[in-house]
Image: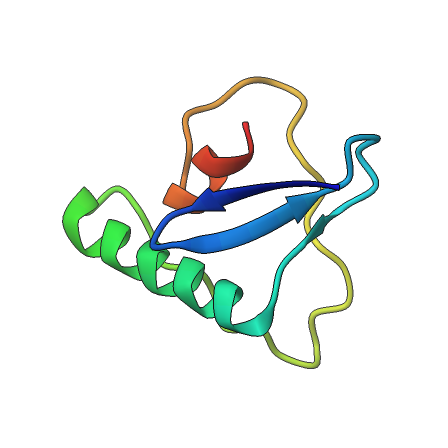
Length: 78
């Protein structure tokens, strides 16, 4: 695992083989707060992260073409 600090002192550990990203609940909360702040200052062309609900079964399929970041947290894992 490789560990790095992101955002407001959030510590994120990532598998070097691409098997996942791991973080504590407190670190996730710090990243969500940073994301919310980013949207408040980014202008009208962005939307905040949606609330996670039980109806959400799977994450959306990633786009295959390069596109600008829709959210601050996307810029952390490029």
